[in-house]
Amino acid sequence: MKNNMHKVLALKYRPKNFKELIAQNIMVETITNSIKIDKLPNAYLLTGIRGVGKTTTARLIAKALNCNKDFLKEENCNCNNCEEIANSKHLDVLEMDAASRTGIDDVRELIDSSKYNPTSAKYKIIILDEVHMLSKQAFNGLLKTLEEPPPHLKFIFATTEVKKIPVTIISRCQRFDLHRVPVQELVKNLKKISDIEKIKISNEALILIAKASEGSVRDSLSLLDRALISQNINKTEINDIFVRKMLGIADKSKILYLLKSIFQGEQKQSIEKLREMINEGIQPANFLNNLLEVIYFIQQKKSLGNFDSELSMSESEEEIINSISKDINITTLIVFWQFILKALDELSIVSNPILSLEMLVVRLLHLKDMPSYENLLDSLKQNNLSSYDENHNLTLELKKQKKNYK
Ligand SMILES: [Zn+2]
Image (tube, rainbow, N blue to C red; front, top):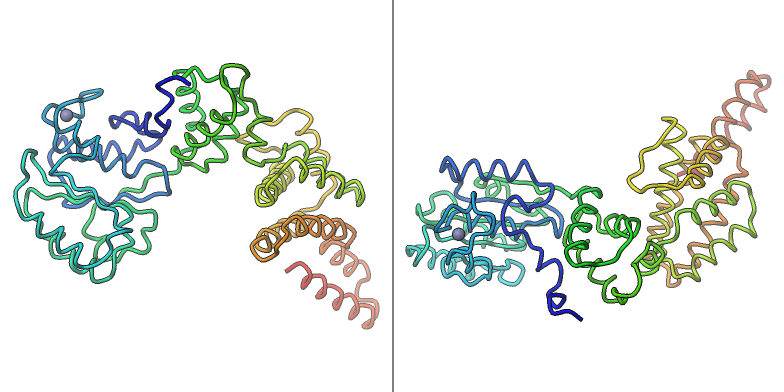
């Protein structure tokens, strides 16, 4: 293995300047502008899901505030301060994980040390990661310093769970929400890195990795790392079949064929198709989420006449979606959606999730035979309230039906 492969990709390709941060343009613009005109908040609050660049942004802000040169103009500044901050070794930039130091004593210690002037840089900067983990007392201890910090002191808070932070703290910070990175942006980034690293990987495989990362750059790079480790990169290209296996994702067309046979009422065939996917190693939760996605596409096709899918779909897959969407009504789709969601819930309860999947398929097969809500309403109208009894029976059935759908 080559030397440069030893460092994990997420660390190796950590953005070195604001331009390299992916898909956070508005935040970058606001932060850099405030630095340019020297209107700095006392505290920054960075929120967002895991792996979108909160800690990276915190370090970039610290660099921009303490750089000896002009950090915002430099592509890759290597002044003393920037170097030390990048390596978490700067004496004036304290990084603390609030998850491991949550108490009031930790905060007191921090505040005491922050009273002194910075040793070598312009600002003393305290980066508190996972700040929502602080205790109530610890937050209270922070309040006064946050309100009137000494001029040399800046706070940068990062959190995945902003709702757990007291409003009194939030209102004293300038808040920035880091967004989930769209699939296309993730693919672009993965492609760029694969090219630099000379990794042979197909575009379909990159799309699958990007989709599985749910908007997190770090997750996407970790998955690329995993794909690299599992496959000898010099010999064969990493393709979508390999990544599907690695992630436990079923082939979309297989899910479509399964759904088709469910709609056609082919019980034996449906179960066989499901078992085939299970044998190939699909993860139950992934399977159900893929099923939901397909239902969503059919719904889109039905209501809007077309669908926009971030994952490129083959012609034959589109054809199946078209043919299913013609024969199915929206109510059935909604009920399918509910049942699949329920099955997802069940996964955490049952000891053998595979059984849940089979039972779900059986349930869906029988749902298809039930008269739809619309059909019942129609027959109600057609009967034109001919006799009370008949009508009463229908109403009862309608109620039963509604109850089943819940
Ligand atoms: Zn610098």
